[in-house]
Length: 177
Image (cartoon, rainbow, N blue to C red; front, top):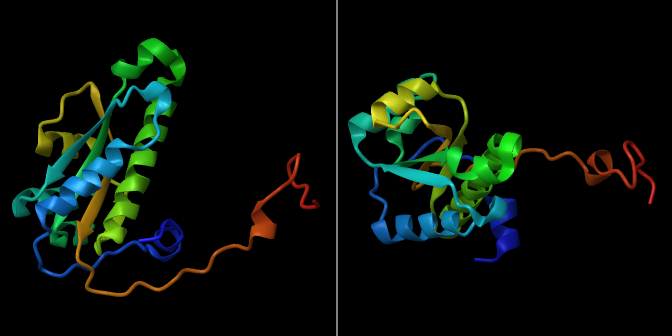
């Protein structure tokens, strides 16, 4: 599928069919995450694939009771290990780590869409509850969860702000070029 089509047509999906995701698709999605740009090519991200119904329901509770997580085919929990990047980037390590995982999440969502799957980026959750459920060590941070599944709905295109309102040239608020 063409990249521009994926970028423009991908939507956040919160209603999924009760249909199993093929593992070869999950592997392709994780491969896309692995190829995301990252600071210093340190690749300090880690991905936990959650398929177990009870665990997905517990993650839904940890995500401020967003029940649709329990209905997703799979949840990918996106983590980073800061100590792996800290020795190179010091105080900026946390920022770079979050940027790394954000790029990986974008790749996950675009690749999922290209394979006919819906997805949703989850940022609102109780990190300690997620860590407890998945036995994540204290020195690992959880940055996001991504639901994956076959969409039950065709999500509508949300209104986008016009480029002339969000792009400046050479300095803040200069809209003239």
